Image 1 (cartoon, rainbow, N blue to C red):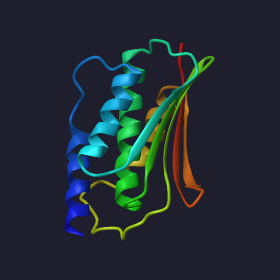
Image 2: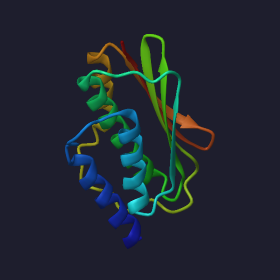
Image 3: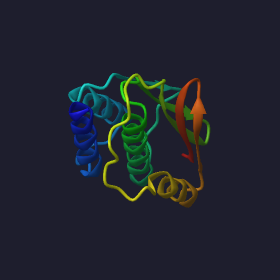
Image 4: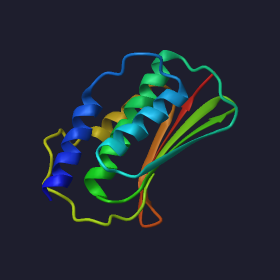
Length: 149
């Protein structure tokens, strides 16, 4: 239980740090998966479609959404593998954070507002996109679809 709580706290601390440096899709996904691995969480990632440069505001939104999805997966599905998928489509980009079934017991709640998903929904709406989340194959799936040049 202490290890899991420490893992969650480390991820929350990383989640709150602003990212500095070039934020390409490769850096985004590699960094997020490395952060998970550093605290003992199994994660994979992939990019689908034709990669293209994205505006800074969109890249930062994708990072925020991915981080929130990862923290939620670790908090609510301890031990479950996490998959991040960034899909480029004509006129849009879609980010999915999915986790499988938990293999451990949830830990004590961490401090937070409890408004993470609501805030992400507002963010996606502000950018002209959408955010969906809910149960999926014994786990949970968070998908943001945002307009992209």
